[in-house]
Image (cartoon, rainbow, N blue to C red; front, side, top):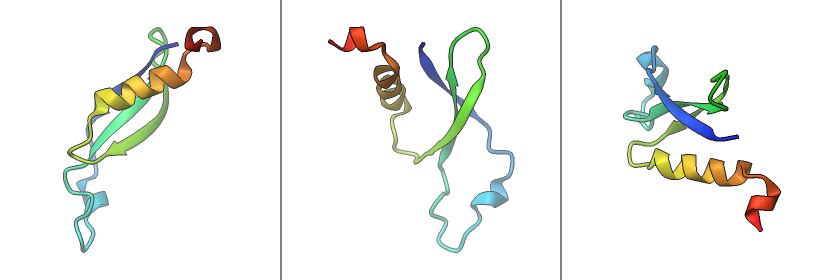
Length: 70
């Protein structure tokens, strides 16, 4: 199983309208497990300076079979 992150558009920019604007520039990614069904398993929001490829690598490592971790 190889998880992947797919960036998706934030359709409601008003959702991030807040007095401090803390969420401005954040990016939304759909987390998918498996290549065939591409079933979304969740959404993660990352700050503008986050490296989504590192998160993807971490998810892949966490989902690796136990034998591969030895």
